[in-house]
Image (cartoon, rainbow, N blue to C red; front, top):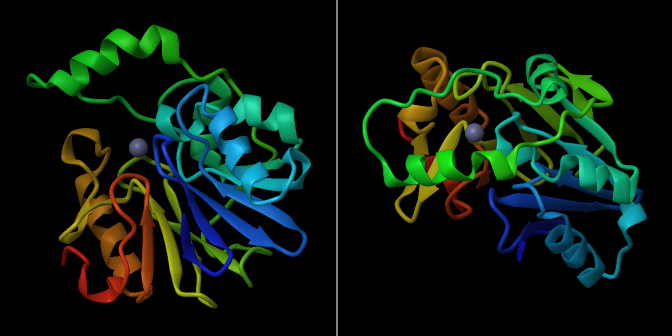
Length: 224
Ligand SMILES: [Zn+2]
């Protein structure tokens, strides 16, 4: 599904994955649950591109639904992989970057716990560490924004030229607009709130979250 010029949402994959098309190749933001690679590469083929055209995979953070197909995608494409230092360490260890609280009852949590042994991400060594303010040669300049809070090394990616922000799980969306990181999955609530403010200050036109619909005309839809 086309989001903006050269920006696509890959359908039917958890979490939301975004594919960016540049003259020198494709960039994928996040890598989905384990076994998502077929759908992702099928979508790439549908754009008339090949697996080898995928040049970069940028990870917002290390939660399983964002890195599950990373090793398989790397094998199929040879893409260069990017993450923050803290999240890269978690990915290398095949572990979460922070403890996930398990208080209270939730059917979703029970299902996830039951599935976990079948869904573990393989440990993977990311090629390149990203830091706040760095700019990747994607979409006319894709800036790394430190949005720690949901997880300790979470990053978002902002393309000022097209006004598109990829916010990972630093915010989620509903049809009504943006919300902060889900409380039960949040590592540091104060930093998560700060991450929302930092992103609102960028005044993006379009926000592409890890979960929920893409938010258009986004500047008035921040949870401030
Ligand atoms: Zn997450």
